[in-house]
Length: 276
Image 1 (cartoon, rainbow, N blue to C red):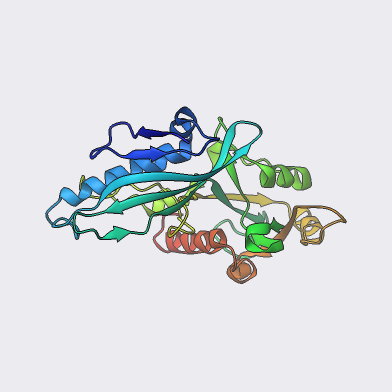
Image 2: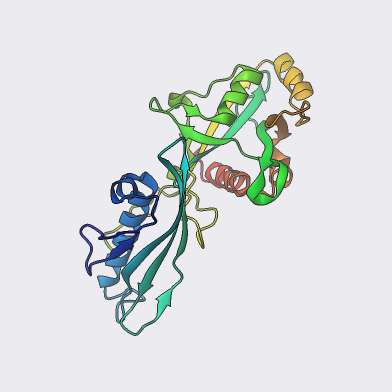
């Protein structure tokens, strides 16, 4: 184990590493970089006299790396750490953190092209069903999740399954970032600069998920074919599959997935405000 001082920290913050993690690896891990810069900025907002903690501001004093999961050799996947954040009165804030970084969620809506484009009738949402061991599930219904590749196109396991089953590829120029639209109000220097995404479990995890919308009008015969095919039933041994769910029922069908509920709320709210 080794210790180093976090660059540009005031007061100086010692970072205690595990034996399988180097300073260079940690500082180059995007999730750590995003988390620490976000936290440090939030701590500076206490300088504002109207801030709740202005009279006894909290400071980051220590970081202890507790464990690291490496993917594909030396690539960091997850980090578990404990951050000591306290004020001069000795009062502390909870600081156990599971670092994994951001991902994206996709609300993919299909509608027969013989329905009026101004209508919400017959809209269906693509959901994935797959094992999610942390949730104790072998078949959790959820919003397709993944990442945006260098070209801004939806990528990852769910995107691959969607393309394989339907031939649909989700291009960057047709995506609408609903989270960004909803959070587009101007911020001042005194406000926190959190990520433009939904935080599913902010009490213990840094993960943030921007929710994107993609709508596609398709021939009715194609919709009927996919409704018969994308039922959520998996072939023997198949790990991930798709199902079509009526838009008006998606809050119930995918109600265990925070991404589904966030997407449903964002879609409804933005439509009500005339932004979609």
